[in-house]
Length: 83
Ligand SMILES: [Zn+2]
Image (tube, rainbow, N blue to C red):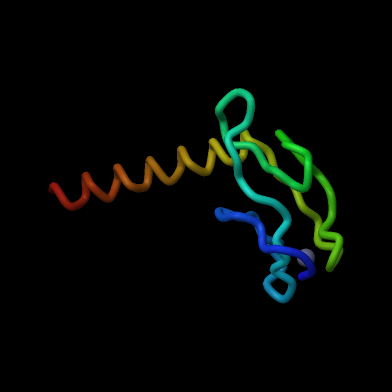
């Protein structure tokens, strides 16, 4: 990849043979996590990776849902260890 690496945590192409950095997570104007690519802050995005053509979908809602699922999984594991 050309240029300086993006700050982490970065979002990378899901194609494991590609793995190009597509953007990075930053706090948006509403303080939720948005995606930054170049000079844009993005709340939702549908496109393809410019390097390999893999379809790509991302939204702040998807990210919140992922975080919720992780939190549920963590709490479930805590309950398992207590019993
Ligand atoms: Zn790619």
